[in-house]
Image 1 (cartoon, rainbow, N blue to C red):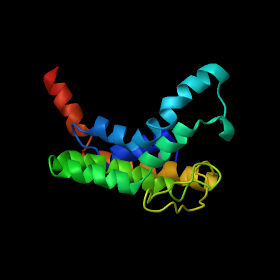
Image 2: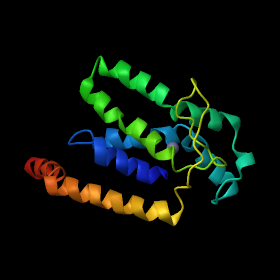
Image 3: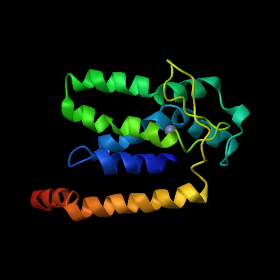
Length: 165
Ligand SMILES: [Zn+2]
C-alpha cells in the first residue's frame, strides 16, 4: 500500500486522543525507515517518477526487509508491552502495515517477507496501485474515519482544544 494510506490506517485503527500522531508514525514507519531515508535524495537528484529497481541501493532493500517482518515487529512490541501496554497497542499499526503489504505487493516489486529472518517466504500479490485495490482501499478508509467520527473520537479532541482557547 502507499505510505499515505498506511499512515491513515495506522491512525484510524490504533490512534486515539493523544496517540494519533504516534499511530500515524508507526503506520508509516516500515516505509519511512526504508524508502523514506533514500527517496527524498533520489528525487532531488533525478526528479519524480517510479524509481528504476536497479537504482535502489541494497541497504534500502535490507531496511525494507527488516521493518516489514512480523518477527521483528512483534519482538519489539512484546518488549514494549512489558513496560507500556498503551504504547504497545499503538505500535500495532506497524504489523498492520505489514499485513496490508503482504497481499498488495507483487513478487517483482518489494515482496514482503513477513516471517524474515525465520523464512524468506513471500506472496506474489496484486499491486496496491491496481484500481481493484486502490478504490476499495480509499472506500474502506472513508468508512473507517466516518465510523470513528460518528463515535465521537475526533470531536472530543476538538472539544479539548476549544476549552483551552
Ligand atoms: Zn510498506
